[in-house]
Length: 81
Image (cartoon, rainbow, N blue to C red; front, side, top):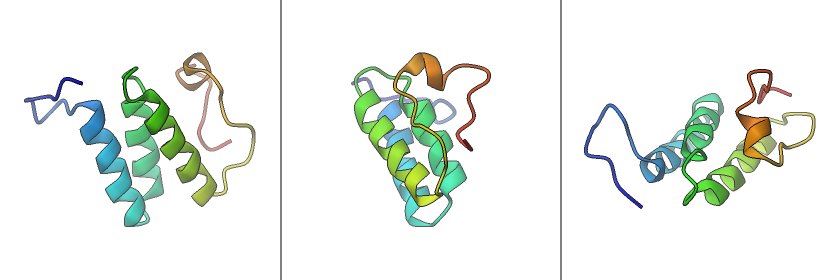
């Protein structure tokens, strides 16, 4: 995994960890956004999507969990369910 040296473009691991911190503070919308962005990296995708599922559970999002990145990155997909 390549870590970013640009503070304006954090790498997937940093985004995932930021999502964890946001979730710990109860900022679930921010955590979900961080996990979605982190999931774009194939190396961290499984971890980020697992954390996304947990964040969705915490916010009691209804509907089915997307099974593919195509679903997640679709312009019509909403994590709000």
